Image 1 (cartoon, helix red, strand yellow):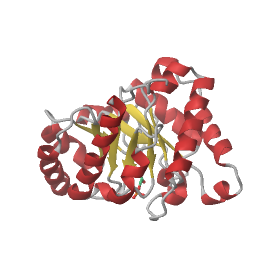
Image 2: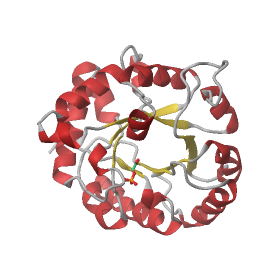
Image 3: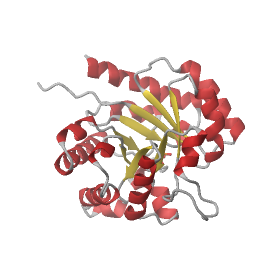
Image 4: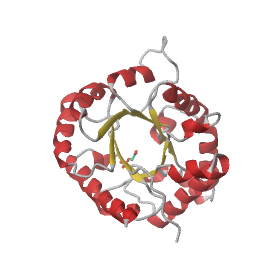
Length: 263
Ligand code: PGA
């Protein structure tokens, strides 16, 4: 049997518009002593205001701090926006781009996300690219076509060496924050489809090493079944990442995946 390629497992907490500086720093302080397995990467996408202070606390830990969005320009007169190099200088190492809440509420298109991805890479921030279909698209059998278009357009013109740095997060929009869970088998098929697509459009080596996370109503009681799937290399967690207790529960379940891979 072919050996399973080792991909970096990443568990990301996406805090959205939650947590003050005090709450964020307290969370990181409480989380650090509970992390026991250093092969799993723990990412926290915190609000902009919490980047610098949480980085200070997370310095010598396995926690990587990142942002949830950025502007595609280097700098400029864009009131209220934030540049990648500002995030980087504050200590961020990654940035979530193309989250469905950005697409839905802030009209972000694949073309805009593509510009943001290129800018993030120039600023040495690792992009986590979110893709996913609506319930209508799913019901009309368009899921794969939509994901293909999102991957193609969001990564248009990104150099081969840079595609390697990206984390892909499949988040069916109908599963985000709704408590509706996609079936692990279905998610596996979709992740496999995305991996094959990356192999076809770029190459197999990149595809084999690409971390593909699943996101959408992940909780301690459904994480294990998702993590059992071969092509699910991590999770992007919203609501359940806001409490140390549930976040740590999910991290502990992820350790089993690591054990199975190395069997
Ligand atoms: P949820 O959010 O876990 O609360 O569904 C996931 C996300 O938006 O990334």
